[in-house]
Length: 245
Image 1 (tube, rainbow, N blue to C red):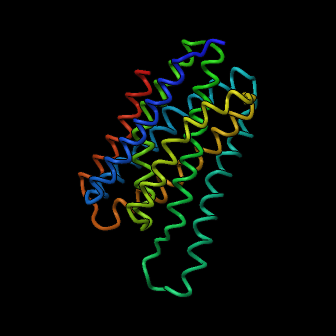
Image 2: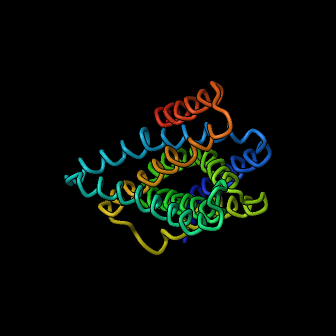
Image 3: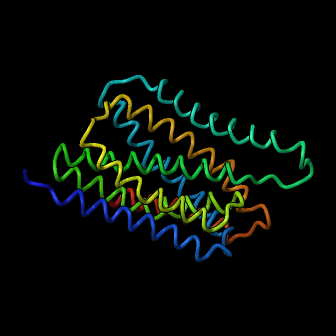
């Protein structure tokens, strides 16, 4: 049986790209407010220029109605909102006047991003099952985004007061996730209709952590034009990458 080496090569590149982004975030954590500003822009860009166009394309291709996907988006947004606020309510009786930052929220956010990275790997594997050309295009898109994924994982961990070692552990999990995703496609296939709902759910999650969590934290100490500029650069970066790929 002949083994296709291309998926293996691109999977290794996704691992390296994710790890590189996260290590960058760890090294420059003293500039965390600027990194968070950029991260918020990246998440907005991923939703607007990557996920939404894919949702629209799949809905048109499958001739689906769009309401169920938007419901999945709202569920994704509200589910993490409820989870985060329940943690805050649980702790605020003991620390009523304290600043509420809980490591569990950062861990949950990072693991959710790892789940998305796993699905990126699934996309690569399924793409190569259809045709080598499709697999390569999907892999290039994933690699281009994975640097930001690693950066986002570390940022989410650090902003919720996780120590650097835990952030590094979460980064390694996120970097391994697409590798496991590719391998999993040897065992199953994902229906397109389920993929549309998943994309809607994850878009809601990204919108929440970007707009309601990361961006306010980026400006919590001191707002500056540099932070705003980093947010614009983050969304512009994803716009350019999505157009090139």
